[in-house]
Length: 124
Image 1: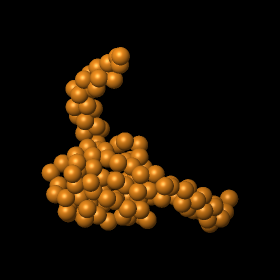
Image 2 (image 1 turned 30 degrees about the vertical axis):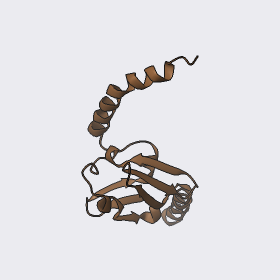
Image 3 (image 1 turned 45 degrees about the vertical axis):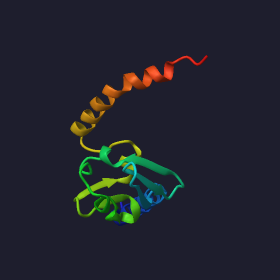
Image 4 (image 1 turned 90 degrees about the vertical axis):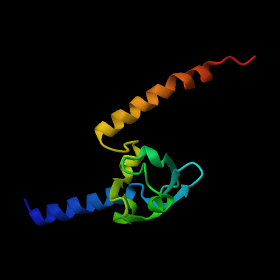
């Protein structure tokens, strides 16, 4: 087995996979409602409330827009907050640690019954 050849082949496949992943191209903050619009390389726009992402709850508008895109947009880093996320995690709806996500889910479940009642309301 030729390790050098195997490495070159593996690197080629890895680079191809990375090239196909969606990357963040731009971030716009909707100040009115603190929602972040992530424009992705595949043409999709992901909109996420800033307060849903762990570490961004008390951030100022300028903190939320002071970012660096790492690895050609595969990661986003909020410099002043020292918070980083993978683009793929955001796309999967993973906005923090398991504990953070459980807390967010519990908070959302408190709201959900009212939303369901409104959706099931009959229209005459």
